[in-house]
Length: 372
Image 1 (cartoon, rainbow, N blue to C red):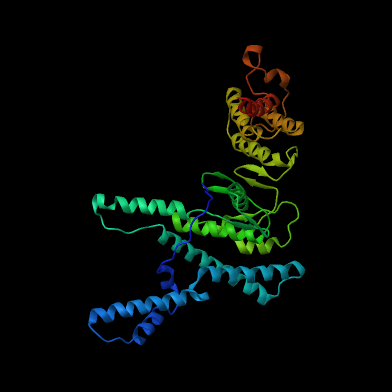
Image 2 (cartoon, helix red, strand yellow; image 1 turned 30 degrees about the vertical axis):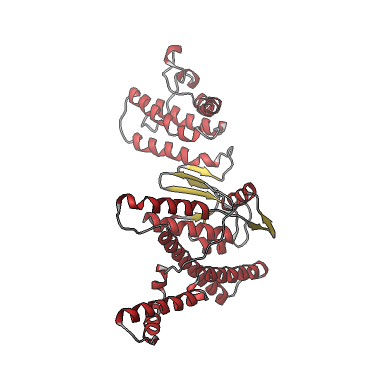
């Protein structure tokens, strides 16, 4: 939940950031500072004095670009924005592409360091002292509640102070529509570098928190209509550029719902099944059972898409021929009309499903779900 309100500014205290330890040469810098301090007196006094002096050095150093994540992030985003502006007018040169890739990698490193920082700040270390910690818990909870607020937000040059407006703008900015099924995730967003960077950061944090890895070899960006510089966007996010229509979870994605082409896979599955079964001897009763299996193959697609008449006629032709001819190549006469065969048993048929009625009833299930 996002809570907006005002707070009183308090004096910030010094915090050692764990990510500083990952900076190349940081330990040598600390060692150099420590050896440069000169104090006289008792050993405990010298130790305290050196620690205070080191603290001041670190505070001063943390304000420059190398020790400040916010400054680093702003510099990287500024350079990426400049390259994106150049890319809108012309194709990037090889050295600019290399620079763009390096900046994206640097941005990922900054995001990882930010994740370390927020993880560090979200934890408090204390000694187990029973009830004596009660006041500490209350103070911490109240402090977090008071500080986790936003009093003012600048949007498109305008300063917003009303909590409802601030909340709406933040939710709108980070709103990303997605669908998930098992370990597959489908995300919808605009073709903008900023959104690609946000997604990349989300994936990095997800990886750091969960320990799970994203298989970029199986990850695709599918542009809808014309998208300029889609290869560049793929370079920011990762993965490859795919083309619509495609197959997702066994369903055609991006194709026309009334197109015959999206049913080619279903027809091929039916033909493949029959090819395997034709190599075996089957009685007519066995062929009737096979037809029941064939009824189920298109059912998954029929839940979502209306099957064109040509598709139903093609599947019926496969079922009809197999029922009367079996595994023989010689054509045989069809003794009864197919319309009579697919009637239910009470009406004198064999109970083979009517594909057209099956498709209609499956799609009407959605109407029933929406109405109830």
